[in-house]
Image 1 (cartoon, helix red, strand yellow):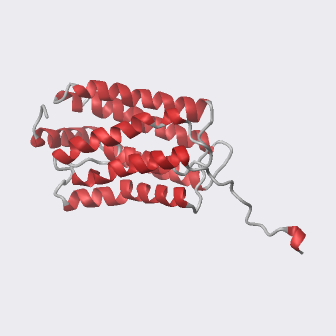
Image 2 (tube, rainbow, N blue to C red):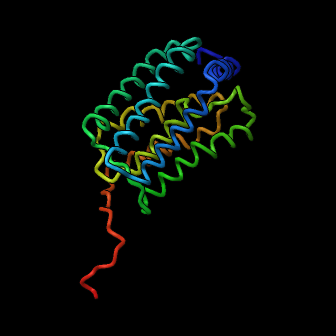
Image 3 (cartoon, rainbow, N blue to C red):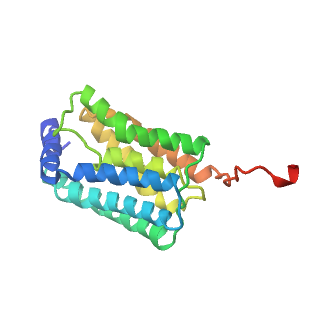
Length: 220
């Protein structure tokens, strides 16, 4: 690593102090995305996709380019890829409307819910237990917890996932955890699990069509 653990944690502190109260807005946006994925409407899919676009653009610019680049030149490379992922999500989800979010009580839906719960609730609690106290903590909106959340929300889609949406989040789930664990961010242990399991399900799982809960009138 071209930096120390202390320098890495200080980047978190500098970021958290500078962007506050953006952390609250980011979590609120995540909750809105979850609500729209459960209570669907004609425009909800594009809104959820737009929220994911914003998350990845935020991570690329606000974290990688403006803060992490202070201690690691590779952050310029990472930032470019995160911005490119935002473009991919915009193309697939907002322009093409190929991402249809609809929560279902099946394997994909339950695993997605667990990943979302981990990213928003379990992740910060584990961080506190492991001694990563605010502001020296990876809050939601930073790459690792937000990538876990992204996989969770994508697992709530009910159509075949376009393959080109997944390579960058999967790659980060493998790169990010290697660096984070070597620096003692043990709450990132779920990152590779989210990436590998989430990608496998999204590529090979065939979403079940949502069935009406109304009784079949022919049976009467």
